[in-house]
Image 1 (cartoon, rainbow, N blue to C red):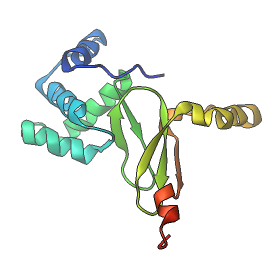
Image 2: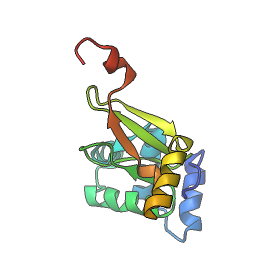
Image 3: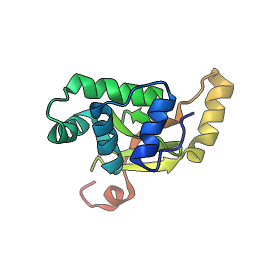
Length: 148
């Protein structure tokens, strides 16, 4: 289970150090971008923002830092449909509802999936990774639309 997201850049970087990792300019920049991002961000979006602040940081470096931050429990990635994985700072465990019509993503509390997780464990011996739950369907607004 991942830890709650740090509240500040200093706290996030302290967590990196406490994990026995060095804090580099690239890591500091990725951390700043993630802290400034609301919601979910594709790696390409993070790379663009990082390179605007630190042009010498390569895309592969950003990917490695995202992986390192995920290993440290600072970042979580999710697959929301057929697009690229998205990243967000770790926090309360939640799942996602993705609209097939407007592509809006709604975060839902992990508890919404309690019964499903219990059923999967009981019937299949399967442990649900709640950070990566993404259910597709049609949101309420699109369901009400005459075009839906």
